[in-house]
Structures are given as structure tokens and as C-alpha cells.
Length: 303
Image 1: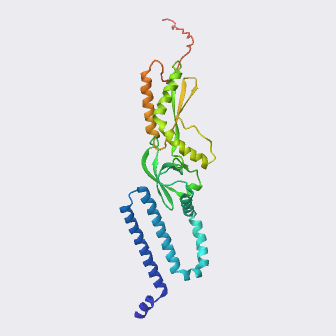
Image 2: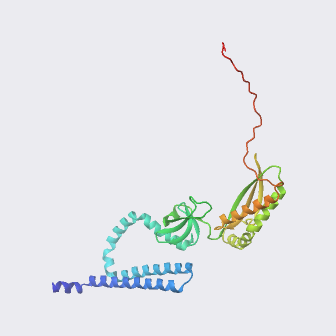
Image 3: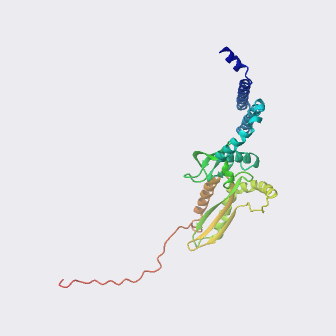
């Protein structure tokens, strides 16, 4: 028994396993200490998140590096076995491998980053975490209107960036265009209506147009894209029922709902000031003619 214990204690393989476990334990403790230090001394949530992710990645790399050094003399004899096993694992875990490849693409390809609002895998939301296998979103929309949070946290596989388009609402240009349709009755003062709508748009969204000009100029230098009109715009079309004005404006991607609310409220207040000159339209039905009805009353015989 003593000879067996002695043989195990001086077995090179056992010694390497012990060294590997101790080294990995040291790496884990160092990573935890670094994360504690970050929470104490880094006040910015975004910066703390990025550094914590980097520290975790460095920890993984160090652990793999230590294992490769400790067992370097054993790896060469297992090359063929590793090759066969690797082929089987790659086939069985192709979705996992695609997700890891997606994480690498996201990390270095600037598809999105934490804080961006994206639509990924058919889900729209704000990116709150980017893991090796999955991206975590705080979902917007679905049963909630107006691009607002609905409370669900969704984890989408990173492999979706290779399968579907990735819509980013905030990457290079953190503004979006939005529109409001305003139906006006025929016979209203069309010039006054256009002037009123444009004044309200300028009051509410004019500062967004000014802020976005410099960013759009940078976009035109980076991409093959034409100059676009960033100022508020009002256009008119007519149909069978009313004259329809389309109010087009640029807005911060996170403030679509509140901005539209402010615009509609101010327009209604301005219309109430001139009720005889501008009237909003609604769906109506008009009967143009009623056919003549011939009615005969037949009395039964004997009555």
C-alpha cells in the first residue's frame, strides 16, 4: 500500500494534473480579484462591463495556455486521436461552433455592441450582454407599441448574424426617420395647415436635425450614400376621402414614442385655435341616391 501511494506521489502524470489544477485555481482567483477591483474603482457601467469581459477572456486564454504547457509532451502522441475526435465534435456541435464564430465576428466586425438597439433573429431590443454563444437583448415591442420595453429578456444565438440580416438602429447613425399622417377635410385652408404642421415639427424636432448633420456628413465619407434631407418636411397627397399630409422628421431612435406624442398634442392645440379654417377628417359614408320602391299590398279574398 505504501509503495502504491509512493508511486502515485511520484507519478509524473499525477504531478502535472496537480500543477494544472493549481494553475487554473490561481487564474480563477486572479480574475475574481480583478472583477472586485473593477466594481470598486470603475464608476462607468459601460467601461466596467467592457473591462470585465476582457479580463474574463484573458483568464480563459491563460488557462488554455497553462494546460498546453503542462501537457505539451502528451499532446504529440494524441494528435491522431484528437483529429478523429475533433471531426466528430465539430459535426455534433456545428451550431455551437457557428455561434462562437459569430461572437468573433461581432467582436471584431462591429455588427453591434452593448447598448445598441438591434433586430436580431427576428427579435428587436437593446443589447445588454454579448456572450461567446449568445447575445442577450432587452426586448422591445411585440405586445407593447412604440418601441418600448416589454420586460422580456431574450437570448439569441450569435450564429444568427450569418443567417439573417442584422438591423442596427444606433451604430453609425443614432437617428431614425419617422412619419405621421394627418387627414384634413376638403375645404380647409391647405396653406395654413402646411405652415402649422411645419412649424410644430421644427419646434419639436429641429434640434435633432441640427445634431444629425455632422454625423450624416461622416456617414457620407465612410459609405457610398447620397446626401439626405434632414430637415422636417411636410408633403400632401389627395384621395377620395380627404387631403392627407405626411409629416416627416428625424428623431433619436429611443425617443420616437415621446416625440410623436408631443407633436400630436401640439398639432391638436394649434388646430383648436383655428377650428373654422382647418378641420381633421375621418372616414364617412355618403348615400348618393335611393332607388324608388314600388310596394303593392294584396288583400286576401273574402276579407
